Image (cartoon, rainbow, N blue to C red; front, side, top):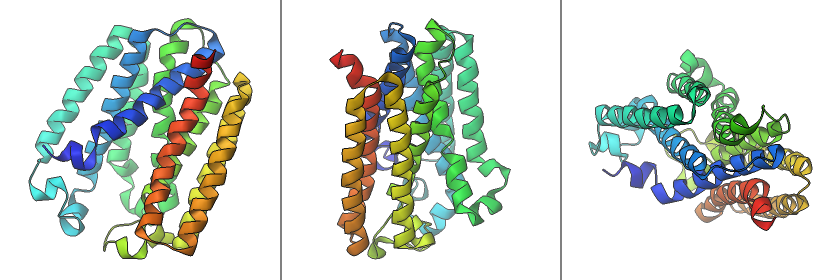
Length: 291
């Protein structure tokens, strides 16, 4: 099946998800002072990995008609995989997630149910598809709310076992939300020659200047939240990392604005991934390793 290779590259996504889940658990552990359970950490990664796969499957259902019309090169229109097969995979993922969550405790099942509920709402465009399509900012903001829910589940593998919810964790949830915005905006910024009819990229919707400004804005939001999160755990290296990444991002944004080529657009998407990777490492993984 070519869906994983073309629409959900396992190793690329797996690395980002592993660092994301580890960062959430590690950050929570620094707040609670508890000990990390390796088994719970593995469960968090598996549940989140399958949740992201379910989000991709939901997109295949949601975009089915548009893909047949405008993107016939994708796996479903080409007949490499059917929607019924994807549905079976989605249910298989849910079975594994449920079993692992039950093993941790029923409170984890409740958090998993929240993820499932929001994924289903996204799958049906919150039952207002026409309105959301005509309001791309609302579409973007509403769909990215899944990110802090996923971070909440991962972090609960620490705080739900050792204490009550630590309020400073809200900073990390805000980081997760803003990082999601940066990734989503970054992957839909394209050079003029790479635009496709019927494909709603942010450069096509808003123009190159507004799209790149929105991407930078999402990074600034993520940076502010990350600095706030770093202050809570008194890990100043993370602030230096954020400031360095912001500087690099401004340079890359300026390069795309001056010369909107395929290469400069790809650097924006790549930087969004690197940003997420390094920020999560700096907040949740490196402090524990270095201590």
